[in-house]
Image (cartoon, rainbow, N blue to C red; front, side, top):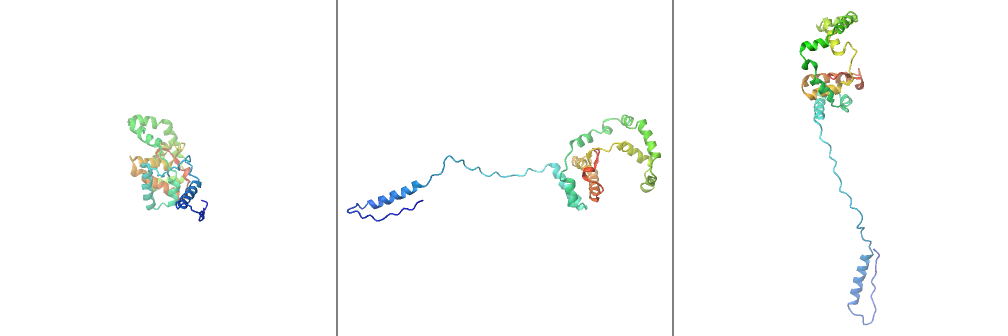
Length: 210
């Protein structure tokens, strides 16, 4: 605001009220010279508080499992590698609830699963096993015939290995809860394999059952 100076007036016979009146006019003029605020300018919006979304039940399960896995020797780096992009897989839950063993009679299931062709292939595979596999019965107490039979049932003798990320599948099964203790033990074993560097997470694929 421009500074205004009020000088003494030397007017002969000036009324006593003239000086105060001039001072008042000067003050009012100074106030009027200040540019008023623009009433059309929009008001600034109030800041919006950013609230993090609540963790999903699956995320809480993963966090709980991660704590127990870390206590069991899994490093933070491995946990990040395994779980930073882990996903719940609805297909895994649906498949677990629709297993043919649970929806058919045992004989109907065996008729479809144990075909003559599969038995014949198993016999051929058993005859052609490498010599080092012959130590399995002595080491683990499991006959080779049973090992080959499980191999045939679970992966059709290695022709089907699955395309679902193993860690995602096992985490989903653990969260589902039907066999949580089993899923947690298998998931811990998968993390130990990952931590050893034997395989990358992206290459660790399998069936819906892990």
